[in-house]
Every structure is written in C-alpha cells, then in structure tokens.
Amino acid sequence: MKRFILHTIGFVTIVGLSFLALLSRADGSYDEFYLRFTTPKQENLILGTSRAAQGVLPSVLDRLLHRSFYNYSFTLSTSPYGPVYLESIKKKVDPAISTGIFILSVDPWSLSNKDLKEDQTSSFRENDNFVASTTRVAQQPNFEYLLENLNPAYRILLPKRKTTKLHKDGWLEITIPMDDKSVLKRTSAKLNAYRSDLSRFTPSERRIQSLVETVEFLKTKGEVYLVRLPVHPEMARMEQTLMPNFDSRIQPAISLANGYKDLSTYNDKLQFTDGNHLYKASGETVSGIIGDWVGKR
Image (cartoon, rainbow, N blue to C red; front, side, top):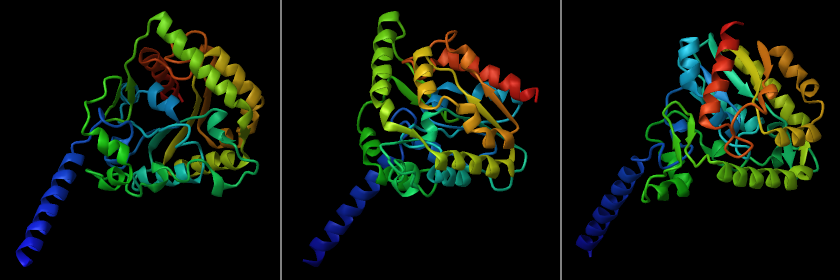
C-alpha cells in the first residue's frame, strides 16, 4: 500500500509538472491577453479597450517618441474605465518612474454601464473577469492567470491561432480577409450588434470619475494624453446618441491631462476590420498621428 501511495504521488507530481511546463509555453499566438501579464512593469503605456489594443501600435510610438511603449488595453467588457482597470494599471506602472508617457483611448462605451439601473461599482461588468482577478501583472510564467482562466490553458493544446497574435509589446494584430465583401459582412454584423445594445448602455458618472482618477494617478508618473480613436461613421452616430455631449462630460479629465485629441475627423478616411476596430495599416497611420502630436506638445 505504501509503495502504491508513493507511486501515485510520483505520478501525480510528474503529471502536474508536465502540465505546468505545458502552460509555460503559452505565447501571443495562443491567447489574446496572457502576455500582458507576463511582461515587466512599464514606463509608457497605451490604455483603453480593444480599439486601442488593435489600433495603437507601440512600435510606431517607439520610433517617433524615442522610448518603449507597452499596450495594456483589453476589451470593452474587461477594461472599461473603473476601479478594476485603475487598480490593474497601478500594478503595471513602474513605481520608480516620473517621466512616463501615457496614451488613454476614450469613447462613450468605455465610460458607460450596461444593463445597470444604478451607478454602483459593486455591479460593474468587469468585477469578476481576469483583469480583476489577476493580482500579478508582471510575472513570467504567470500561472495565476493561466490556472484561473482555463480557456487560455486549453488553447495551448490546440493549433496556434492564425487570425490573432498578441505581440510582446502588447499590440493585438488581427489578420483577416479585407476584401470588400468580407469587410461589409463583418461591419454590418458589428454595427447591428451595437445598435441592438445601444438602449442597454447608460453614461456613467462613476466611470468618468474613475477616468479622472486614472489621469490623476498617471500624472504623478509623467504626462497623460487622451485620444478619441476613429470609427466607422455609423458607429460615430450611435456614440453621438449615447453621449451627445461627450467632450463636455469628460472635461474634468481633459483639463487634468496634458492634451486631448479627437480623431473623429478621420472616420471616413481610414479602413476598419468591422466598423469598430482599425485595420492594422490604418492603425499605423493613426499611431503616427498620435506620435507626431505628442512629440510636438
């Protein structure tokens, strides 16, 4: 019996170590978020939702501003502005820096609640997701993230993704067909989804306050710039319906920041994968505009 128990413990140990070794192979081809929690604390950050994750390229800002940027943006459901995202940002920023540059993407959706009648942080949609639960954001390998998020762990057993790749600098590259028919189909589906959800969103004073608190914190670490990224004209019309006085609503944050740039004048001049996200070539263009603007401030 004793020998059986020892053999069992040995077998379980080997299986456990093998599983951990398998998990440690995770990279940007398996998961859209994992690498953001394995890289070191950062001096210069790009922040926001998936619009920024896909549309603002650190490599372009690196070249124009002569420093290393990291894209710490996630999704509308996981990183809208609020206490959860702010806490994660605080953990990701290098505590020793005071000359960083922080680019914050802002839009009505990331400052609104969904399906909430009252503006209570205890009911915010991001409270129970991986941004909230991952306490270590600069650990390689990050077993906390992998073990608490089984989908990414299981993906390691599957073929690598061909359409998405999370780069080491946090940029999420999307490679999908960009012919007119494919783009029109995706755009129609995305716009219809947002249109059907529009009535479920409500501008949140608490989220706007969290944006202000985020700017206040980052100002102690360097310069802060707010950017409203381009979107499809129809998406822009929905956002106007959701928050028609957007600039005035976020004025407290604008007044604290080192600058604010509304890039909606480019809405009809760029290419989008689905009406909501910039295609990578247009992302390069927009990143160049942002870099030139910040560099001249």
